Image (tube, rainbow, N blue to C red; front, side, top):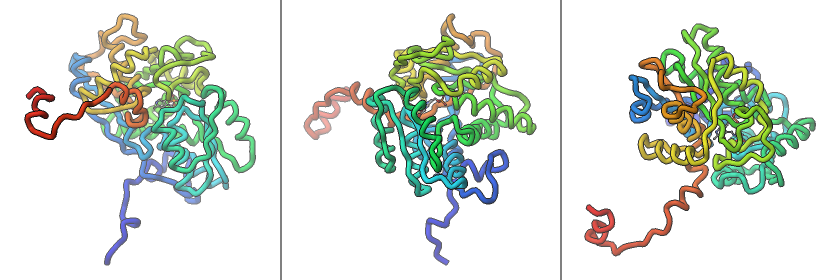
Length: 366
Ligand code: F0G
């Protein structure tokens, strides 16, 4: 019998895959776009940079349905919102949460309201929120101001906040740690990732701990988080009133999960560190050109962080005496195509040549 594609099995999505670890039961309607199951890519050149027989893997979250890790949490948050009868969802965002929330709301058939810092959202992300039909409000303020407004709006009936202050978001995001353990056969020795509002480091640590408690791993990783130097409240241990960085996704001065991030770092005997904008830009380009993985600037903070751990005497966590054959995972959180403008500016003007083999050979100097 002929079957239509709509009933063919798809990628399962994180809820179907990890249902028993999630706050889901039979009556929860599942809103999924087939998120998760992202590649854990072994990176030979990054491994060589670390040396000592260490292996570096990149967890490429940019290949989720809306191009960032937010989809893992959003499938759970929106499914639970629908279960509770929500008519609309709302979020503050530096871009990726809004893109993800807008997509899952569209899928669920409910309204999505996004509150964004005006002029500070990467163009690809703004385009996504618009394309998925979200109601977009730009505020004259930063992400922290937007989140303050959203917390107030969240008191409205039938309106559910889908920022990572919603525990369903964290529950969904912890599945990234499960996937890593499932692929490696155990937890890695180190896990490096960028930190903004600090939901993701909280989620990973919860995921590693929970899997370990279920004997799915024999150890827990050391968690090392990286903030942009101009937006590093956890590192400096004080609120940053005017955060600034090219990594607009992590341009946050007062993270909601600050305390939980501190807990993850302390319990895992890890560290929080800073990387400069120029280190971020260099790492972004390096990863694209040496490993074939193009990520947005915030994600490159994890790679810049890895370089700092290897090379710098000022690193909060040094890899200079790292145990031989350690396994290191770096999460890259969002796709490079989301933030095209800074790269496009580097291309500059391209002068066309005549359509002959000779002219083309001359340009490529072959
Ligand atoms: N990387 C990317 C690409 C992000 O979009 C974010 C956060 C982070 C890292 C940091 O994760 O906040 O859990 O510590 N983006 C949020 C947003 C704030 O609105 O899209 P975190």
